[in-house]
Image (cartoon, rainbow over all chains, first blue to last red; front, side):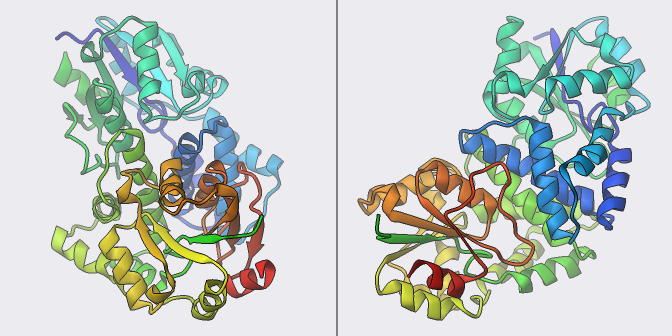
Length: 219
Length: 219
């Protein structure tokens, strides 16, 4: 079945979070602070899913940053945390992303689907100068559940009248690949440094080092 | 409404994980390695919930430990990981736990409810010499969803014919408190060192430093 549309995760898949990672690590005084916080952010986003609650990702980010700063023995006002985390809107695309999207755009509908809120997602892709490649930019807020909940992927399919089997989900996260598989999509894992697929999910259809490599595989 | 039953979370609420934390940190060569892994374990347990999948917690622990060891540039066989993680069955209870359970047992049904599997939960409480206090020991595997999914708490209520409002959930984790609240239970947060409630959930009914302190508050 031909790939008609490609859905891209945003953070760490298209955009390099290193600037934000460095900033968080410096603030909290530990080279692993970002990892601890970001895992907690992802965990609590799914706590929201399971407790029939929904705040947008920036609110969960702020709340879990507070929890982490307690852990690291630091204290910040909400304004200070917001000022640190607003760096998420100023992340560069990985070096190969622009050219790869240009090639993929010729044959496929390109869609971004992120746990981030709509305003952040649009600002991020604009800052990275890749917003023009996307036919649609989706925040999960439109369904009130975070990825990898099935409804997030299904919303994109239904809005664009796509069959799951003609859509490829591209992500640098094992959990996103697992969610897309569960919704019936084809999947491509981008093996950014330090990232792994989830050993208890099926293998993705493709594994690529970066988007250039993926383009070579699927075109 | 009188408290008829108390449900306890196990790891970090009753049992001190420090031995396991030290071991994981030594293995992976970083003082925050345990935190990174344990957050990932909790995140992926909820990825399982959201992808309509269920492996037991020890399997998710092993899978996420593999992912983390990749991140830290280490490689382990499954047997080696199992040998590290089996320390979870040899955790001591926090110092005040035995006496507090003895007091609470006089007036209430005491139940343990853990994300861990049944065999691990029973071995843990036996090793810590507190198994005798519990009228029932529950693993979430009985419903096939991890906490904080509502069904995990509801299973205990329904088996024991309890109304949510006469049951108190005791946990050292904001996510567990949020889940119990969502199921209508009363809640007590045990503020173990470094632990915080989740700022986007309601405040718990009680906050105590440890179980002795909780006993003083509720008796």
